[in-house]
Length: 303
Image (cartoon, rainbow, N blue to C red):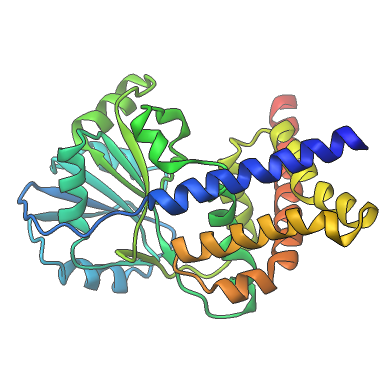
């Protein structure tokens, strides 16, 4: 019990440290005033047939040298990107809107830091209780396990938390990666969109589960260890120790939620109040998604 307690406390402190690093380093896409005219191909990730709001926000941009491409399916998305004519490629989910300054800021950051790709984490809109329960979970997980600034500083592309729905590429680098299937060792960066991309997607249990599994690369062992330390660990402390002892882990969890809420422009009061329910949802999403993945893999292997 003592060893497990120490492991849980170390895990909580490490999570808090990563979150504090992200909070202080402020890994957000900046609003840069410099203007560019390089052609950008905007590829709409086909999660929905209704992308009128996104199209309207693209047409309203101050950056005019753009090419808008729509793939009819996820399978054709890569082929569409390979045939794009832009120097840069921006992948955006259909259920999104983009704000002025996004395109110039992406090009500026890519040029200044010689980046080959930027992974973006959008801000989210909340409409109902289910949105508040499901949508903040992925942001909570990734921001307390991934020190964003170190991805670029230490050149660690494998930790970029790649997202198909929101990413910006140097087109030549993207084509090389897709055509040769070689691991890309070029500079990449993960950034918060800082209000310049807003996801308007409704919460979905299936999509939330898939998004979480991608963070852990679908590895059942990593998922299991994470859930034991994240959920079972604090519960054991609460049930077996006095309030004076568990005030430390409770305080770390509270501060973690507040910092992540401010980074993602979410309501910290709501996230703190709903934290226990969100952690139950997190457990259910990861467990159900992992079992489904294992079961589906088993069927495919037998066939």
